[in-house]
View 1: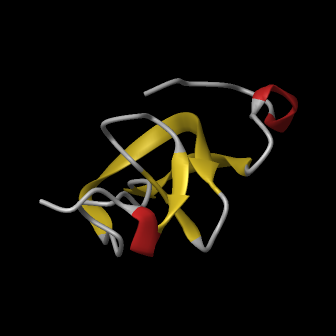
View 2: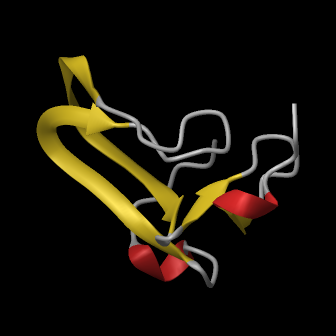
Amino acid sequence: MKYFYSHSYCEEGTHSYTIGCGYRVLEATCDEPNPQPEKFMMCDYSACYCDAPTVRDSASGKCVALDKCPQK
């Protein structure tokens, strides 16, 4: 996963997700489209997450519509 510190680095179709200190919610993926907050606190986390309603295809690294995810 790529880590960034400013939304200006995020690709089109993604947005900056940052938390100061809190419970991180992992990015929605084809495998886990509805992630829940983690059970431990984290500080200064920043990453580019796919814009809703798309999710990350872990195989390609691209943002895709959930119905376009590879079948398993």
